[in-house]
Image (tube, rainbow, N blue to C red; front, side):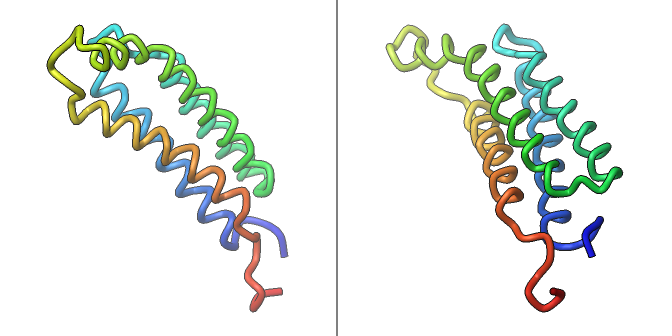
Length: 130
């Protein structure tokens, strides 16, 4: 029976939770700086909202693809807004180095995309249920 059960459903929910955490941590860390991309923040949250709607419509197989798309686009906006900071630290213009907030957001954006990829390849039902 296809529906709101099985491995793919729970992994997709976990991917959504990671996307929400990523958006919130990114906003908390960078909202007061010029390195904040509100587009990245909004795209991650729109992906979660649309994903919940898709799950409600029992479109479990397509939801991880939506999360992957919004995760990649959100990550691209994040990179676009943060690249000047990365280049100024790498070249030595800014001597402070990378703060923990930078590493936290980079890891969370990577986990957002990775969780969506994992959700794509998780089977809907286990072999025992089939």
